[in-house]
Length: 158
Image (cartoon, rainbow, N blue to C red; front, side):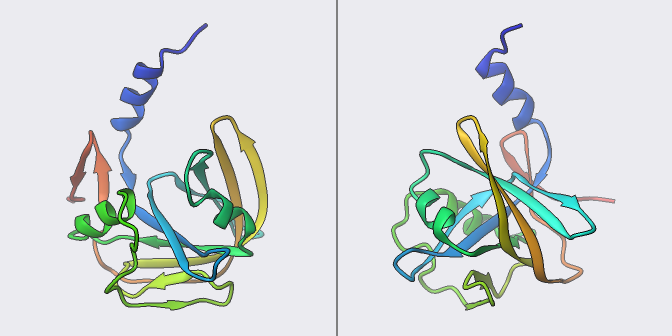
């Protein structure tokens, strides 16, 4: 069975997902990051998470060389930050408050959750690379997360 790429994209644009900025310290020592909705827990023991990054992404060599990464889950109202890290802006970190974690990955001050990981594995994922990281630190608040669904930002209601 052949899967139609347009249908594949349509299905997953309808799949609600939390929005995160995934970061690392680049080869040049500068902070690097991109907007992702492909972040998932993998294992409790040991505590593992995973994300994917497109092979054609300019930041791929930085993530492949970095000892770790951070997942900065965005809060409702941070749509501009999501767009900044999804677009071509040359200095995505300009004007942002962040610190470097123990792996060197930037931790965004205003994210509702920050999960720092050491990279444990990288796997071939077709046109993406799958990164598995072991959590070395995490913190989060009670803030409402930013969610992306049907090509729009949404609010969680309940």
